[in-house]
Image 1 (cartoon, rainbow, N blue to C red):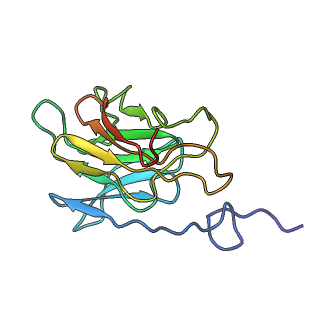
Image 2 (image 1 turned 135 degrees about the vertical axis):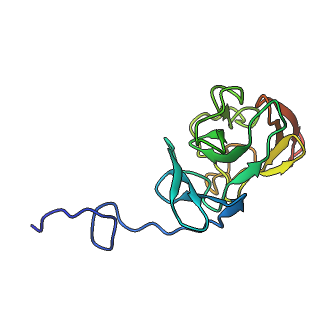
Length: 170
């Protein structure tokens, strides 16, 4: 048998994973998710690493969102990972302790329909409007029963859900 090889390239290790992310650049810092469960911040003009956040689960695969903060809460990078809406301090990459439970909000709340083990994620980044982060949901294609794909809004200072739109009437 051939020896195991690492490195993520073709025929080696965990294999190549493609990226569909569109990075965002704010004040000279580029923020992007990677296909390897990380969100990274780089100096846009040099490529120098500012910080890396290693996520416990898959990260929103097409990008992250930025909120500039409001004087009471720091600027944040937002994305969904492993069933959580995550808020990182944009300057440090550390979860914001006042957003949800130490930077994480249970993304399953209010949409489980009695199911507890289905996959939930976002295929596109959340969107910020004023002090809200608005999310859709990417739900399983089959079986057809599972989480609702409701659109929801969360307060960026606390992580509390502000409103929920039921696409399928209750």
